[in-house]
Image (tube, rainbow, N blue to C red; front, side, top):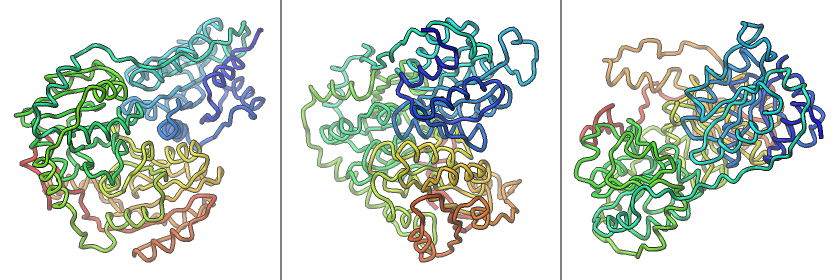
Amino acid sequence: MKRSGAQIIIEQLCAHGVTTVFGYPGSAVLPLYDELYKNAHRIRHIITAHEQGAAHAADGYARSSGKTGVVITTSGPGATNIVTGIANAYLDSVPLVAITGNVDVPLLGKDSFQEVDIVGITQPVVKHNFVVRDIEELEFILHEAFRIAGSGRKGPVLVDIPRDIQTKLCTYQEMKPADTAAPIQKHGDLQEALQAFAKSKRPYIYAGGGVVASGAQEELLEFSRRICAPVGLSMMGITALPASYQWNLGMCGMHGTHAAAIAESESDLLIALGVRFSERATGDIEAYRKNRTILHIDIDLSEIDKNIPSQIGICGDIKEVLRSLLAALPSRKNDVWQARVTQLKAMQNTLSPNSFSPKNIIEAVSRYCSADTLIATDVGQHQIWTMLYYPFEKPRTLLTSGGLGTMGYGLGAAIGGCIAMGGKKTVLFTSDGSFGMNLGELATAVSEELPIIIVILNNKSLGMVRQWQTMFYEGRYSQSTLHRKTDFAALAGAFGAVGYKAATLQELEEALQHAPKTGPIVIDCPIDIDEKVLPMIPPGGCVEDIITS
């Protein structure tokens, strides 16, 4: 059957199980948007306030649902506005298909109105990208885009489709989705890993986003129990284990917990699962590697030995590798190591001296949430406080920007995640600096009647920048103090949301009790400008350099 390019796009989206897309129309995608209008019963389109918000929403949708997110924009500025969202998805290995329109094929490369080389621009931050110059290639390219985005180490794929390709006709082949399962690749020896477990007296697991992506939470729990190993988590791996699990030490790295940092430094076997050993996780590389064997398991072969040399490397899907190991792994006891880890955990359970501290605010909000409540954050101090103090119990309940550190990510991601979860209550922890980046998406949340609770930890500054200026730049607060007079509660009302100011825990709890079941709520919580994220290991430092006060 002959179909237009725009119709083929719709059919391929439906074939790959896409029911929701995010985007913003424009002249270069009008044929596609006309077909979206005709197919509104099959595909829900969410129009955002800005294309960057659409990209973050598609990202949040993908993280919370485990499906591939889709964002659609027009050419020129519409395309360039999603580059940050694409880069964010790339660094956090989020499956995303970005569809951009462009000028007609004969006009490409002629500086036509709203023409940019979006394929060239995005080349460094995608798994792959395509420009469709022949209608006969469109169906195959879309099929490949979803296969690439969802296979192996997941990530974004961009498909640039000129306007005339959307209107031309060709035969639709009805290609079906490809199998994206990733088998274990024989890089390293499972038997060697088993021998390392048997020899180790102080094993330590460093688990990351690869565990969440592969759905390996149960295997990780059993693995930790089987070898008596505590678990430290990367930011992307925070939901890989329940916070209530006795061997969960929380986040590790520069801003990780004290217990995770000490236990990791004392380990003799470091088992890295689905992590990339960024410099914020390791600090001083030589000190990090000293006196321990490193076993690195990752689905991406290029990550093994890239940042930290390992004695044992295994490439494959985390779930499948752990299953293979567990099949041959006996249980063991390790009372001495378990007692030490218990001691370390007990040492960090301190009370906050400030009753309206970030810790107490986050814990108060958590009492109004369930185990499956979706939590989103922006980037900065509030992000780290959320990692440290919010009790995540279930996988895929956290939406945060890890690798790129994108301020302004949170609200778009919360919108996408909330929609993916069928409109369930969602919480966004943000700050005055981050919220100001993309607060226009509040219009989207209101229009879609999404029950998003937005908690602004408002210190009237760029808090993380100020903290570094305090510690490393002798208190020279260059452009980090925000002299803005924005009334966020009143602003919420102007958008059609409900706004509150809460300066005490009682006022915060009253606002939470009145949160509407449909539509967003904004709670502005003033905090001290000099609240810090602690403990902290300085850049390039090691555990001996840890700052605790």
